[in-house]
Length: 343
Image (cartoon, rainbow, N blue to C red; front, side, top):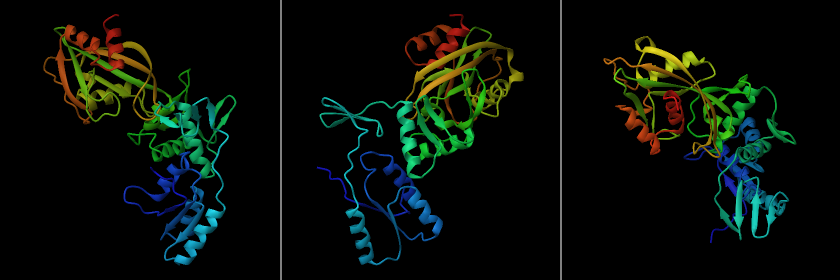
């Protein structure tokens, strides 16, 4: 049987991550967040001690240290240890819900469940509470972000990365938009889906003069829909983009094609997508897609430039529709293609 430790001695310098990051993760996990923690490290500067304590350490001991002093500090901390029962646990019969760790137990056996945006925000809020930061708080009407929106979202995104909630970090800012398409601020791309923010994308349906279609297979290392087939081009609209500049950039990066080389480039319309995704913890896509169509000249062959495409293929309409029906295409590509074909 696995036993719960009475106390944790935590070094700052660890092989795979910093002690501060591990400390934040421990304080955000209900199973361990009440454990006494002493940081034991050679980092003796005042700002290092403050950082350790602000991240949730109960005590901070610098090297070299006396074993007797460490033992005395351990004993003093253990004497102050209090039971970790929490009123936030909710029980109904044999079912117990822990809203902070976002877990459910049945007859004391943990059940793995999907996370929602609310649960993600609760984890982030708890991590901030141990750092004594007031960036995110829950109110009756919903979640409130304090301070400058972009600056606060940057801190939230970094906390999400440390907690393993935001994966596939890109150092790329996407616009934060409301239901009226107004830009409110910006946020790191990796945090958009886990937070359920609305996003914008652009797609290009590539046709040939003989009625076939150019399609791409997404790279196998993509965080979302790896290995699935897509339209000739599909990319996000960043905070510094317009639809037109994103179309131009993504068409070159994904397919190696210049817009001036295409025939009959026309705007097709808008497709709205709302769906869960496995891209991160509790992720949800709410995306507006502006799509275009164009004819690819016979002497042009798409060549990927950014490493995010496994291969291109030129396929007849019937083969493409069969692939869509078989679930081989992304949902976004399926909807855009259906719109392009008049369905």
